[in-house]
Every structure is written in C-alpha cells, then in structure tokens.
Length: 278
Image (cartoon, rainbow, N blue to C red; front, side, top):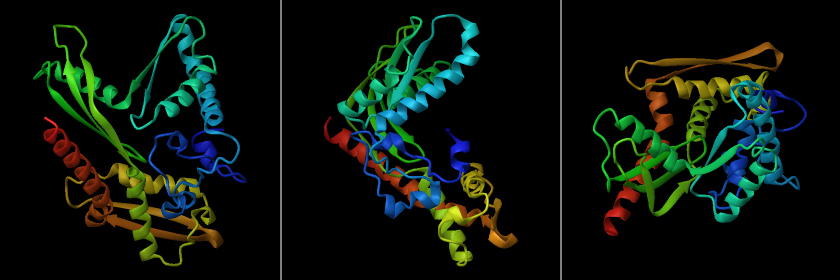
C-alpha cells in the first residue's frame, strides 16, 4: 500500500522519507522534526532495509505504469533521477533495487541521471526558444524539495544546432535537510499557538491524513503576490469538536521565511565557493 492510502491506514505507521535513508543523504533528526506528528509516518525501518522498501515501491509503480504504456510498443527507455548527495554506495543500493524488479524486461533501456542535470536539461530546452545557453556557460541549480535543498554547479558543454546539451559537474554538490516540510512545520506551530488544546500528536485527530494534506495545501496554494491572501483550514477532533484557523498573508510569509533564508544561504555559499576557485 502506497501514497495517500498508506497515509490514511490505521494500525501501522507508513514509512516516509525512505530516500533519505540511503548513504550520503543529510541526517534526519526524527525527534526534532517530529515526523510522526507532521507526516504521520516513521523513518525507523528496523530490519526491513531501505532497498527492500524501494524495490516494493518500484514494483508497484512499474505495474501501474505498464497498464497505461503496454499498448505503445514493446520498448521503453526509462530514466531515473538520483539526488547528487547520494554516495556511490547509496546509488548502488538504489540501482540494485531498480534492476531487481524487472525494469530491464522486454529490451527496455534504463538511464540514470542526476537530479541537477535533469533540471538543467529542462532549462536548456526552455531557453532554446529565447536566449540560448552558450557553450561554457555556468549554471547554478538549486532544487528545493519537500525534505532537502540540493545545489550543484554545472558547466554547459555543446550547443550546436539540434545537438543536445551536455553538462559537467563542477565541484561537489551540496544537500541540506530543509524543504517544504519545514513550511508545514511552521504552519502547525502557528496553529498550536492559536489552539493550545489541539492534541500534540496529529494521529489523534479525526481524518488526520486529510488534515495534514490540508495544511500542506495551504503552503502549495500561497502565491505571495497580492498581500491579502487568506487560507482557512478545519480540523476535526474527537467528540465532534472542530478547530478552524485562518492563515493570513503575514502568517504565511512568516512560515516560509526560514526555508527561503536557507535557500538564499545555500545559493550565496555556492556562488562564493565557485568564484573563489576560479
């Protein structure tokens, strides 16, 4: 069971942030960030093993994709992206999981690419209709995800007509444990300040998984453009009690601020390091 079905299930905690259990990932402080409360899950895999969980997920994903793609022909080129923070050991464990569940079947091809390079390829395609990237240009890729902020410096190699761009990694990529989850964390802090009687463990809320999705949606819907946005949520508690709260523009800016500041620090540090080496 995966996705929202797993999040809404009762009796067992779903596993979350499994990709951060692979070697080379930034450390996850489970107590400090209270994953059980905010995500309703755990990173404590016990004796199951990261590779086994990834394999099970990829098997389910493959079967679902194949239902839609099998009519398109026998050969498919799959491309899996990997965080640049993973060590050789982490990448090997991930690739072993991929190749253990049949993605190579029926003459399928598999390519592995770094997430930074994948982002750069997308940017290169976007720029083809405007100010094209030039051979030798330097790119700073900042990938701000749900759990990490990853940065990498790339050099553009090749820009001859329709020939695809290639990219060379300059220096070591960086990854820190900070991301969209931390915005959710700040929103819940505001909610608890306004409603101190709210049970600390979100698993005690009625429809806890849906409530967590609502909190995350507040973050995702905030544009920050008008200065007048208000997003409301409602959480159901035991005994037919309800907690309602409205996040205004200033509250949402406050929730985003620590993550935005972390992003800017990462960008500034990478630019400074690159200039110092060149």
